[in-house]
Length: 167
Image (cartoon, rainbow, N blue to C red; front, side, top):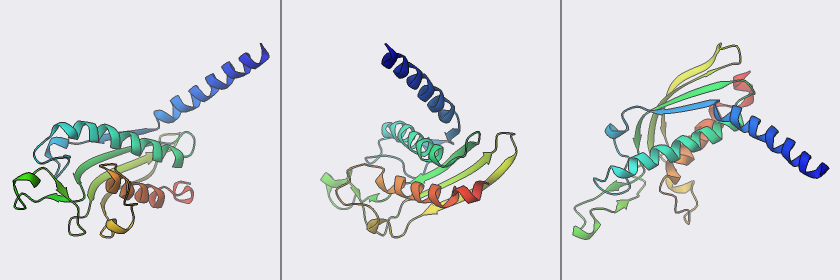
């Protein structure tokens, strides 16, 4: 009986903590239909909605770990150019295959702002994220379609939101 009460209290506490953390980061994509490149295959826009959802969850999760308690952040993604390109001149069988070379690095443009618990602006800015060495920073067996984009976002979050930068 005591053990079940402990689990209930622990569950409620963790639920409250995760609920407050989930509201700490808002991620918005502005005109994702007009992004430079946000598709898994040539000309297929249906995957952009799943990419928006996946990157939103990824950014929220990573930033929540970095924000002090009570702080809130808003990230607005204005453009995504995924690593690689479609090279339709290769042959008819390759027009829906993304060719990843160091010639086609991932790019993400975004703006952000962080406010403290009193609503005071702590940090804000616009960033153009690029990684010209992206081919050397990701494990080759990773099959995530957004692995390069997630890597540059992780690097940006780690650099931008160090604990010393927010206090």
